[in-house]
Amino acid sequence: MNALLIIDVQNYFINEISKGLPGKIAGFIEKNKFDFILFSQFFNTLNSFYYRLHHWDKMFASPDTDIVPELGKYVGKENVFKKYKFSVFTAQGFPEYLKLHYINQLFICGMDTDACIYMSEMEAVEKGYDAKVIKDLSLSQRGNKYHLKGIELLIKNLGKQSVITSDNYRYP
Image (cartoon, rainbow, N blue to C red; front, side, top):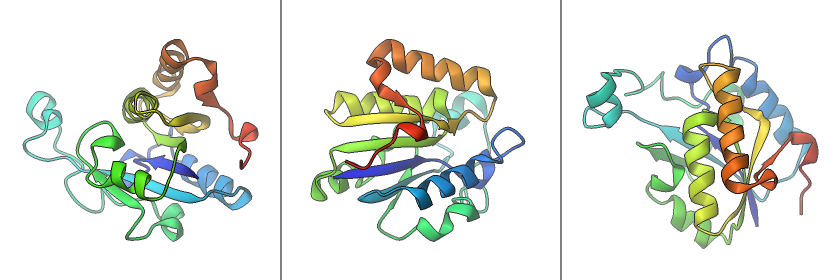
């Protein structure tokens, strides 16, 4: 089984750089088939290293943490995993969900290529999943330089096969 895993496409992370991304992801979903569509949803806390080290006081609650409206019709109670760290594999219930539903292939997209996508892809591969980042459906809120650096590091560490474009996706 496969899943499209949409990382942190939430209101706070949408800016001038990323404003077109939700529509692109929605269009991709409409044109393609997946066994599952999954979301990670980041939340900050007062105990997080984001707050302690950087004094970052965002992403504590709605509306910052909401999945963007363009993807709302794909969101349900069972397919959103709250996380408090970079990797989606730290989200409560996420690894168990993958096992329960026999998901062994992940197509990852969303925000930020140089952080949460990078960490989630690395951990997915370490755990034995066939995981690929969809380059043109992923971004970094701080710009293309960071996005491309994340892609470069994924290719360096995991090989060219770890990154695809949306045109290369085929339902198994």
